[in-house]
Length: 242
Image (cartoon, rainbow, N blue to C red):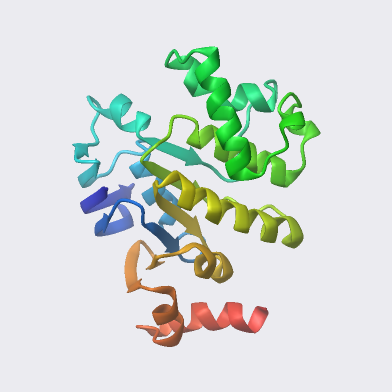
């Protein structure tokens, strides 16, 4: 379970994230939805311990996030950043097992987990020894997801994971990601500005405007009963564009 209690973030006195209280139960897929600059990536980075909240508390599986616990908390989470963030000098295999090697897993254990992840993400085994530049965009995203899942995290964070992909690759990866979420059993927080992604993945949606949650609930409720003019316009802009 993930909990945020009155979490805020200010930069140079400007509010980027207003007081935010959220509880995400185990196994739920929560989508943070909103336009660029609304604070959703900052929220994700605070959960990952990459940005320190100005105030408030974040807990992962009951463990408060702090300087003293950051190592323990990070063992519990996997993080997929925009466009994958793979190390170009490492093969797909080496990228995936990086953290497992760091924490001292045996070769046998890493290989067993690799087989599980290949099946979970529909990644071709013969591509494991290729470098990122030798992989397609969809394959790179699968490697990034496998790297995030290697330690069997209880919490998975994804920041616009499909934003740079063309529509055909994106549609296929959406299906595989949804399957991977269900099979991993992890709690998932996914950041996007895309209504289609939100509708595909979300058990619950939080719509953000300038650092504040302006509506929260099932996707259908967001679309059918927008709580404000901002939410209505945000939804309609994508419906008209499509």
